[in-house]
Length: 187
Image 1 (tube, rainbow, N blue to C red):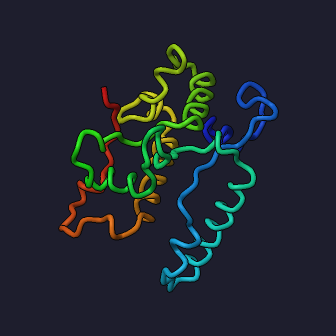
Image 2: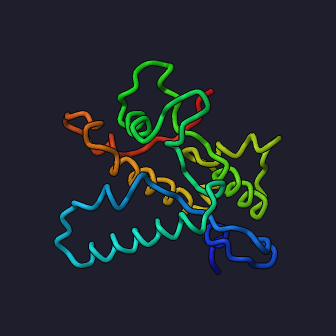
Image 3: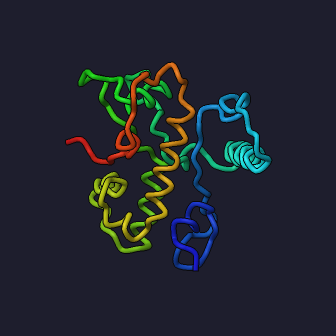
């Protein structure tokens, strides 16, 4: 049987899991076509994979409403001008001041998906969904039950940072440990 995450993500209506008329979820990146247009792809399988991703992101724009988009960390918060540059800068350690260390945003799509997962798997949501952001953090019990969500979250993060403009990446020797994301909540 498919896991609840894949059913919710696809918006497939099934009794007791996904309500009829539920919209699918998806994630987006800056401009995948432009960001990867000059990439040298020597293997035909890589060209096919890029084409599949281009198709995915085109379909996402027409089929998935913005309210259903997941992991839109780069979206600016009210009163800020953060965009992709802010996201990459945050994850690559460019922001040193407390004012700049807002961290990634937790969006309505994230809340909606986690709410549905919590209801279907019996996890508490807290008052007005107050517990939902913690379910995306390191060592979350939900991520232990639905490891696909952890993999999806981390793959989307790596993709978004990899597509960030290279001028944002500090030129220094990076270690393997620098590539391992650590997820948490700020008090």
